[in-house]
Structure formats: structure tokens, C-alpha cells
Length: 68
Image (tube, rainbow, N blue to C red; front, side, top):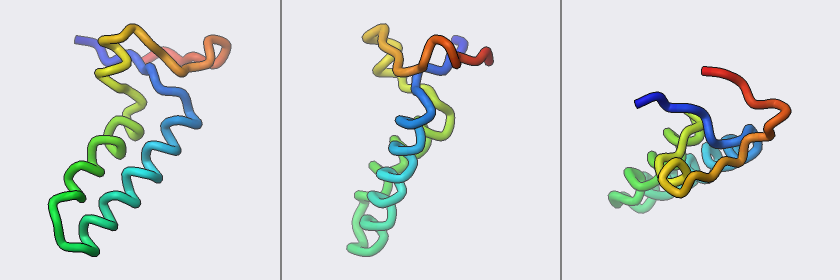
């Protein structure tokens, strides 16, 4: 399976920031919440969301889309 990018730059940055905040909050309150925060961090870092692929969605700008 080829992971074709389906998350735009802005959404990718937002996912990494929000995921990082969730990870820090999980570490601060000493719970497993931090592991849930890894999901948006990883999907933002690789610019691929499996749920978007399943729903055949993309937030990439077609003019700026880059090849893998």
C-alpha cells in the first residue's frame, strides 16, 4: 500500500501541535492520554490519514500537491 499524502501543510502543522499538547497533558496528569496524542502527531508528521483515504478525502491543494 502506497501512502500518498492526503493532508495539507496547514492541517499537518495543526495536527502535530495539538497532538503534542495532548502528549504533554498526558505526561503532566500521568495518564495514558499521551498515547492517544501520538496518533495526530504521527499522521501529521507523515501527512497521511488512513481515515481520509477510506473516505476518499484530501486537504492537499491540487496546485501544490507533491509526489511521494
